Image (cartoon, rainbow, N blue to C red):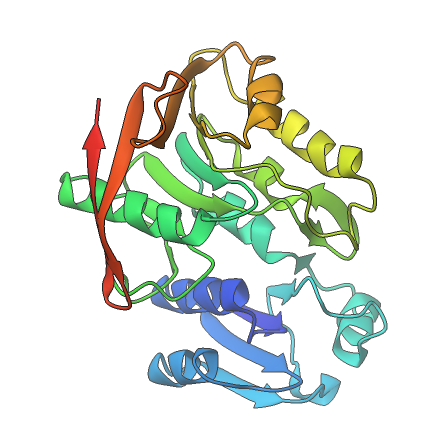
Length: 271
């Protein structure tokens, strides 16, 4: 049996991938400086073997070491496995290797990624497909935020934040999108993108890797001029969506929220 150890397993993305690996037949262990609900409950429910603190002596010889993005390069466990020259990967690399398929739907943008990725993956399932997915959260419609299935479709939440401490690429660049849902481009993560143009550059790189036969589904609102400019550089098919009540601009699809409360939302889509 192959084994994998997650340093920083209590991250929501790390935990989802860890449980997925266990369901795939891997022996999974993990460590973190602290464990709190709901992720600690999620790990316990799935019987993941984890411990608090950093204890290099508890790491034997796993096939893969996965290091969380917020783990210091001076972390004792990281320094230990690096000295032992074990295989070290980031969780976006595992997403690319075990989740991303030939037809890759990536949901990107400053906000809305988790909700939309969970919703789209659910739509694929009820349409009779068997997609793989990665969702950076605990969605009510899935028992796990990550899944490796056999269909040639995948749906992944694509974060613009860096892949790892040693890899400055935005996560979404690893997911090879053929289909992109773009919700927004509003300057964020100033620790990584100190200038607004640095933030925009990440999305420009993303747009450039969408194949000409691919599709970009992009928001259209009164604050999406930046999206308009960036997607104009793509050769892919462009589909625009926006709120139904705003009719001062043209969209291919519009939505009208009919109910919104603590239990969820209901909406109608118009074409």
